[in-house]
Image 1 (cartoon, rainbow, N blue to C red):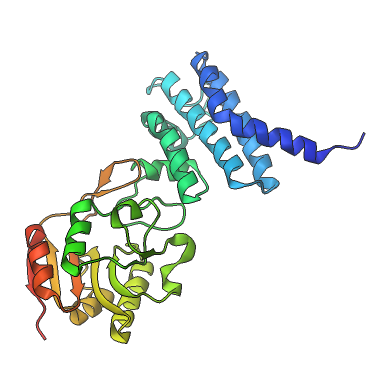
Image 2: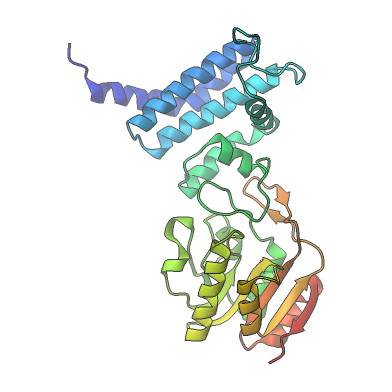
Length: 309
């Protein structure tokens, strides 16, 4: 008998999309961690099948969401001192590595945020993964200096956004942003990791919190300086770590009109509402003619100086 693949895949898609809700009552009845392991194995097999057939993002994400719930279920059923997965190899060693056990426990610590993460991924058109979930909740050893694909970004707190808006009068362009960040920034034009701002002209008043990793930070800062030199950008507030020894920072500072050196480190936030700080302080670098306005708006955040010319 010939396999009716469209019918098979249609049924698979329907069941996959229903799994995140269906798994909750199943997990609530399980008391043996080994049974959860069996569920995880089945979900991983479904996920592998979906990826092989290049199914759409919502299907993949539903399966990843299910697997995250199962991982959390295993962690909640397994006392920390036991480790492993309740099953051992012939030599008696746990099948799960210490790294895997640690990841499962981190997922279990944030089980209440799995559904929020699923919604975030749908809003951001992101493909979910357990690694990305840990970044989302701030437990993936990711500080506020990492941005980019499959790494959840850390966003600028409202008081700094409003200070930039007050200093410049408006925020027209945010070239290194996300849909979530724009709930606060509200720029007329913004670009995300999906449509790199490096490929577009920047116009008007710019606020930029660039990706704090190389070479991205250098590329974005140099692009900003080029746009200022070209006259496309009339004003800009650039937020970076205070890496005063780097070439990109020196170029921005030399071209700027004023700089605010923050008193302490900024506590950035992520989509889960958690906060994290980089390992050093930050600077707000201003380009434009409203120098007094910038200095007045940012004076409360740290030492604010006009740059000598």
